[in-house]
Image (tube, rainbow, N blue to C red; front, side):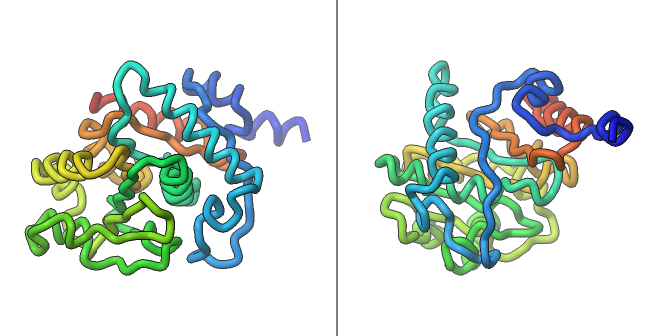
Length: 233
């Protein structure tokens, strides 16, 4: 047991985050079960649960984290798949809208999109249609959710060149347009270590939220993901 503990390189606690990354933990989200992958965000289905409260803690801490520079556009990523970044994005969007903010969720995971599923919305038209000018007006791709004040721009058609689209000037212009329509724009991106998409898009955001799965995300993976984000400023 001692040997297994010694060889375990995963991040388990907030202290591990501080030691490995020298970053604060904005919230610790308890694990929770969902019956289906397409289940509604827990923050809307069970607003009084401890899980929902932990997302409200995240909302509060993000607000104070952006005192020096207003957090208008927030990019969410993780080191590896399955860490919970899309779950975090959808629930954070819900609790921010419940607090009276106008929120737009953007599914910028152009490889394995899934942000539309918790809200039972269609995936097309969406972001890629706006980027390649198949959709001329952003209003065409803004989908209302059941939570007042929360809207979604889904992925759209899956392209063959995701990184190029996300790194384009049109993508930056689109984030500016969405920012004019909302108090907060939350962008869900692919894992930072798998592809370059998150790093390409990070400079266009006001902040990046790195989601870590306790006892799963390894310290070296988290450090590499952080370094990729920092290298692009």
